[in-house]
Structure formats: structure tokens, C-alpha cells
Amino acid sequence: MRKTDQKRQHILDTAYGLFKSKGFANTSMSEITAEAGGSKATVYSYFPSKEELFVECMTYVNDGYFTGIFSSLQGIKGELPAALLEKGKAALRYLCSPDMLASKRLLIAEAERSGIGKLFYRKMDGYMGELAAILRRAMDEGQLRQGDPLLAARQFRALLEADIVERCLMAAQATPPSAIAVSRAAEDAVATFLTAYAPAGGAVAPTATVAARSGRRRPAP
Image (cartoon, rainbow, N blue to C red; front, side, top):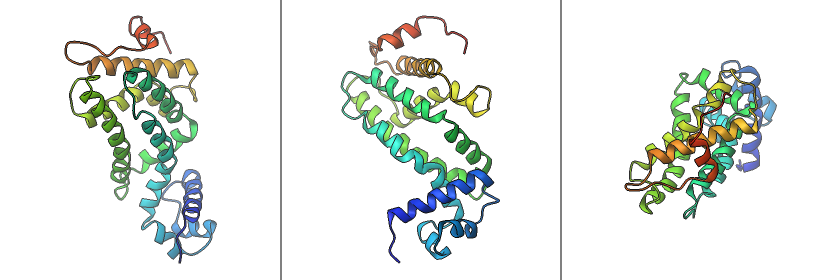
């Protein structure tokens, strides 16, 4: 049997739809096989277990998206604040999309089942590793103070998600959030991050928008 990217994607698309509509426990590999076509052996040749297939379904949409965000930060020389702000807004728009929120809720509900949470965490840490490499370069160039770049990447992500992502996830705010809410959350996250990682004896020059936001009271959402 010859494996193909097209077949793998078809299995993922089929499984993703079933997991979203029925949940993990109520979706069987037999059902996925029946809808995707082929045999169980074919599905298992691509994904060794239902758990691994579930994690892939929850993350495959992110692969190209976040890789694009981080790769576009490569080569930044003096424009780190503006780049973080631009990519932070893009990430927030995606993280607060109804489809992404539904997937994250489903993942959280199943996190304790058969190591699903650990599998997903390792997958997401790969994205953080890409961002950490970019931040390490910024530290070496003196744009940021020296520190643990992987921890810095996780902290930047946490700052981005601390405001509207959590409220959207808990259905405490209408989704998708407004462009103003997204901009405000990204600006706050970048301003806080740059303050925390300002190089010794100086500060990272913020963008005009971030500087203006950090100097005035935060309006109500």
C-alpha cells in the first residue's frame, strides 16, 4: 500500500468532522474508516491509535498557520516590536475564531484520556521552540535582555492569551472579538513583554501604537 499526503489529509478531514460533532468517546475508528473509505489497516498505517489521530486533528490546522507566523519573523533586525505586534494580532484572530475555540474546548475535555493532553502539549511546544529560536537571536543581538528563550516564548504566548482568548474560550465574550479588542489585547501583551525583557541599561523601542497604549488607562472591553 502506497501512502500519500492526499490520503492522510482525507483521513484527518473526516476524523476532524466526526470528533467535532460526536466527541472523542463516541467516535470509533470503524466509523472514521467507513466515512474515509478504505480499510482499518490503511487508517492505522497513517495513525497508530485513535488518540494520536485525535491530537493530529486538533493540531494539523495550526501547522501551516503558526509556521508561517514564526518564519515571517525570521531576519527581523530592529523591528521586533512591530513584528511581534503584527503577528500577535494574527495569532489572536485565529485563536479566537469559532472553529479554533471549539477544537480547544474539545481537546481540554479529553486531555486526561490516554495521554492526549501530553501528546498535544509536546506538539504545541514545537511551535514554542520556533519562537524561542527567534527570541534567542533577539537576545544575542541586544534587542532583548538575556534569559531563557523558551520560557520567554511561553510567557509571550500566555500574555497574548490572558485577555480575550480566555474570555472567548469560556463564552464570556462574543466571538469573534472585534478588531479593536484584538488590537488592544495584542498591544497590551507586547508592551508588557517588552517591558519585562528590556535589555539592561535601556529599553526596546516600542511601536507608536504600543507606546501610546502603555501610557493610558485601559478602556473597558
